[in-house]
Image 1 (spheres, rainbow, N blue to C red):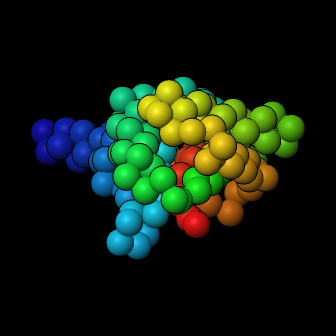
Image 2: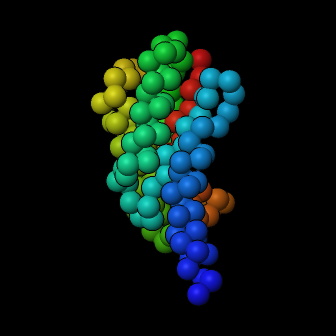
Amino acid sequence: MRRTPVLAAACLLPVLLAGCSFFEGGALGRKYVVFFETRSASLDRPARQVISHAADLAANHPELNIQVEGYAQANGSLTADAMLSDQRAQVVASALRADGVAANRIQINPRSPSNEDPGIGARRVEIDFGN
């Protein structure tokens, strides 16, 4: 059957996106993206790798401040979705601190739930470096 490779590729797409798109931005790699499963704030292995890369950049550039922005899709209960956005940001910030990033360098900004960026885009946290 020819459908098996297509199905396997479709199932691997989120994993490939997580591995390929953790780095966006300028020469320093100013933005890292951590993806989550639907309705989850748990870190998987690819997410931990992205956070580890971001912590390495933070260690090499102590002059940069870090913004951790959590996102969630609006799925019904805006209160629950807002809490999920905040939880995701808190989990990533906690992992950055565990990887040696000073807490006073991290600013947590949960975003209001929306359907502007549906699907995997709404299940993310962005780690953004700036001055």
